[in-house]
Image (cartoon, rainbow, N blue to C red):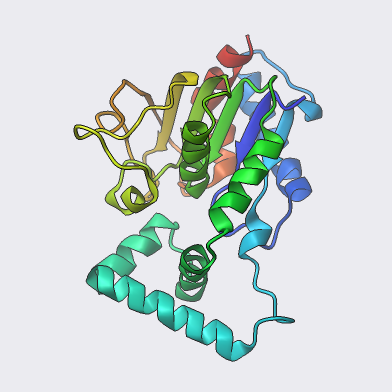
Length: 244
């Protein structure tokens, strides 16, 4: 039914949509349980794009991988050296340097990547979709797709662990107008959930021109974990309200 579309973040290339669904469905249900709401498995669909970032040793040699990582490192250096590298690693939640450089290399070298990811969103979002909930880098992807498809009508956009409010995300966003980035007009409500110990998550109010509902939660030592975001009461309340 796709009433809820969930968009994963970076570094899910070794998973798949069925595995993520199996992990995320109980978490979404636990968040909804606190609002006395329930969904069937068919209500939740995962927009999966992780495979687009998985290296293919049958077509890429080890030297090719090393060269692409070196090129990504040079790009980071040109952005401001080690401070930019540290900021990028924070942006992708402390992933190891090689995985971070692989991500950057693929994102900057594949001219068709954005279209391929957007095609995954198009295939997942349906007329009955009431909620898009997006984690980390997935919030950037979902935001861009919402702007690109004004024909979509989604009740609630929920960002969890989102870096959209930080400067590292700015290069991935459309140009700001009068100091504000576009607000997706095809959503009725935008809820941004931030865990207090999540080093990636940012507040968003003041950046997108219209008020965004900010919620703060405690994820303990699992600050950036999508599961602890999804099972939180604040996230469950936002989803339950959208589903009616």
